[in-house]
Image (cartoon, rainbow, N blue to C red; front, side, top):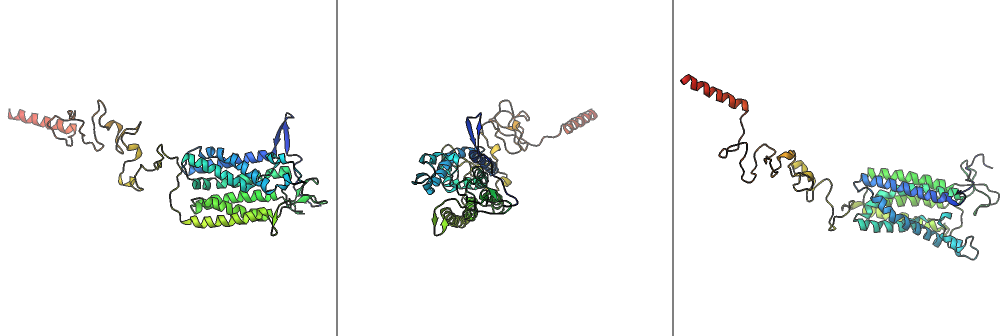
Length: 379
């Protein structure tokens, strides 16, 4: 008997008012999704994307992901539902709240749903993938606690102080053994550490074009390989390795290959929805057709462009009152020189007087007084 251990919950389902079941596994999945969307939304806005984009894409990703995750689980563990001596009924394959989601299927079909959403909005799937990768890792770390409440997917026997107590009647338990490796905890901690690594690496190396997502896949599968090897639940084996271990190896190599392949990509990723005609939207920092650095040369900024709805068509630094063509107002350039307003008389000068710098009022007064004194002396 170990000196210390982690107790398992006495139950994983609570009934509100004695009727409505509230399942801890489902709560963990929902909480993970909410946190992932919140993280993704924050990162997308920081990248310059429109608020609400990740929330909208989640409407596509979540149902696709749940279906994909359940399909993968049922297909790879079909003997649990359809074998002659299956411990579950075939109908139980639909009961997702009892546990059983394959992350590989969830990511695959979830990505398909996001792809549909990205096409509808006209934004780059690769940019979205990089944005949501850390949040997905956090969601997995939270979702793994559902296995804790269900007392499932634990590892082999252990006497370590953090051994997990499992009820002796649970599937996969060994007679006479009370504590097992808490593989749910190992994977949860691995996922949270991976999320921090993805955020750091994305900023440190300015990773784009789904390279952060590729790093997520490589990091997750590396951890999943050794954690999967510790589990003792029933699974298909190929050449001595569990099926999920082989899947991890294949995806790990594919992720590294893509990470290397995409290293030289420099094409721009669209993060804002396309315009009405399908054309790319204007860069928020520059008007259409303006190259970087034009503003330093005195180019007109979007706010200064004439004709914008609700904006005055003035040059940078010009008072709105100087705008030409306003009824009852003179058209004066920002430098102080008169502009032609259509042939009307300039109220500041007689019709035959050329524009020029006006003399100060005090100077004109002094000249007039001197001329008057001169006339008096001549008299």
